Length: 470
Image 1 (cartoon, one colour):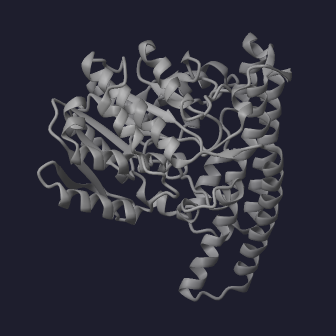
Image 2 (cartoon, one colour):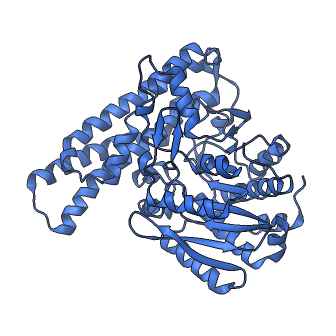
Image 3 (cartoon, rainbow, N blue to C red):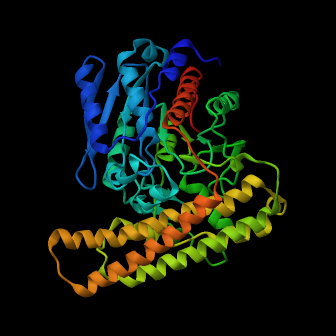
């Protein structure tokens, strides 16, 4: 399908954004849009967050099918908020765009608004590995808005949805969307996609959306070993079912698979199984290194690269656990950084992954440079994020002491000791990464362009061909 003039003009006029917007800035912008275009735009509160912040949803247009788009399904992923900022304004003022797409749009700019607040210290830059990881926050799985949908699958039963998830479930049940755009993004790497069902007719155009703004595809390892590829960098959407089946197949004998899961399902699975909704995810990087798309041969087997990654990850997790132990008795039960670190260091599938790479012949071949880079360097970048949260877990308690005027010399000493150890280790790791990873920072405008163009292509195709998630 060719890109029509309405879409072309929309993509050409994306502003050269220099920073991401905060929760308050996004909310204020949505309120202004509803006031400015009252005949086309309405704004309603779909629910409230755990911290009692209003979750705002824009309703734009009056098309023949419903579409739902949400930013910040993970709060460290604000690229989608900027795409929605631009797209919502243009939907409101451009009747030709609304008519071309023929949807009624429901737009939630920042679904995990509480978590986005905890990322605000890096949103305005500078965009470096150090600053991003030092000010990063991502919640534990059982407190993630897009991973606490209810599920009953085999022996896994989860029904402890958090308020933000309940609000989105109610909205999905109300509007029964034909199309969902779940606006995730990765931190490092290249572009890749998840889709509910294969769309081979569109892959070349999706690739071109990235190529024309010089952002590489992510051709290293998939983000999970149970990802099902439809094409290079295009994968079947992930629900909790795939991970459960993977664990069931590869976990050591006697493992209670269901007990290993503390999370529920995702919006894609919830909407697809109930309403046949098609969901698109376009994953994008803030940073990239050209090695992520290098398919030439590396220096070791893919199996060796994966096993090295697991070994390094376990060593890092031990450091995180040991350092947390210095001050953990003083952490508040709901300290969000503590909860996240406990969840992220409870590696439930490393044994399953070892079993898989030792038995799957695909891992006996020589790794590509991309796979080697992914396993040996990019994985360490992602560990630096936990190092940053370890600092913040202690700072969170020290700041609470200061606010309340609490005086407890022993507690303060333990928190400062753990904080200072964490600061030193985080700086050591990020200094190494800054030296070893030859990264570029992707301009926000390019990221918005890729995400928007893919959304336009897929939403229009799903509408015209009545594509269902299956």
